[in-house]
Amino acid sequence: MAQDKTKQMFALCIENKDCDDLEKRKVYHIVPDDEAAKEGYVRVVDESGEDYLYPESHFVIIQLPRNAQDALLAAI
Image (cartoon, rainbow, N blue to C red; front, side, top):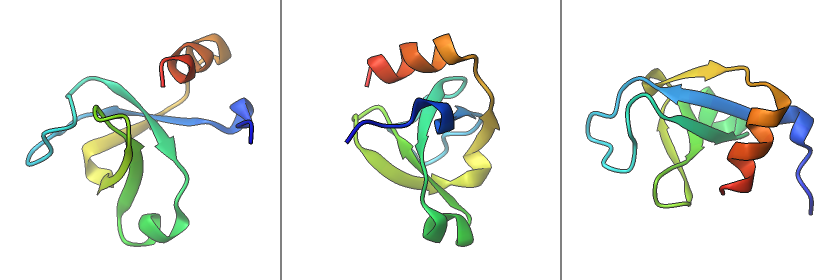
């Protein structure tokens, strides 16, 4: 199933304590997960290429131009 690129979310990592698969100051793709959000987590595609839950306090949600979104999604 093709992803709707207009609704993609990205976040900037601002903390990686106890999270070996995250890099500070790197932009990550966020996978929507309402249940995780209720518990204070976000589902992130990390350095391993898989999506995992991380504390939302480790990230700042950011808006990216469409061409930047396309470039990041092409690398996944």
